[in-house]
Length: 247
Image (tube, rainbow, N blue to C red):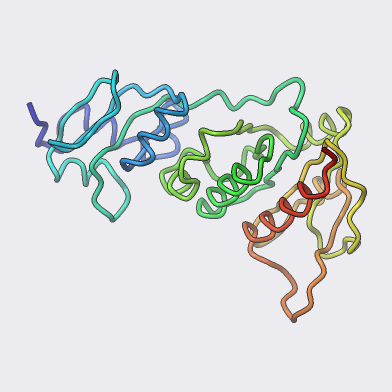
C-alpha cells in the first residue's frame, strides 16, 4: 500500500516536525534524504519510521511506509526531491557531569542553521570531543542544520546547556575557555588537553557574560576585514587548537 494523501494523519504528524516547537514537545525530529537516513541508522540513531518512495532502498529492520512523490515532497522541506525521510528520537542533549577530554566547541546564541551544521561537520572531521550549544542557539535537529552537518550530528555528543552554568563547570574541570573577541589578545594561551573554543552569535559575537568567563582572542587579520563568518572562524580555530594539543 502506498500513501498518496497529504491529509493522512500520520503524514500530517510527521510534517509537523518541521516546526521547532513540535520537535521539542514530541522529542522527535525529521531526517531528510537517503544519505542522512542511512548514516543516522548506521550511527545508532533511534529511528522509528522511514518514509520511502516506491522502489527506494531502505535501512533494514525499521518500519517503512511507502508514499507517493507528492507526499514525499510535502514531508520534506528541501527543494531537491528526496527518496527517503525518517522520524527519529532526538538524543538526550543534557550536559554531562564530567566533560570529555579534548576540544569542546561552545556555541553562544548561534542562529544560522547552515553555520551550525558546518561547525558540527568540521568538529567531527577534526576530532573535537563534543559541541555545546546555549539554549537560545538554533536547533541542531532542524532540517537545514542536519543537512549542513551531513550526518556529523550523530557522530559526536551534542549538548545543550546554559553557558552561565556550563562554562564555570568546564573551567573547574581544567578547561581553558577561549573565545573570539575584537578586544582580545592576538596570542593564544598555552593549549593543553582540555580546551573549550567559544564561538559567538553571527552579528553580536559572544555575550558580555560569556566573554567574562573566557580568555579573549583576536585572530590576526592581514587584510582589511575585521571579522570572519562564524563557521569559518570556528574551522580555523579548531584546526589551530587541535594541532597544538599535546599527544
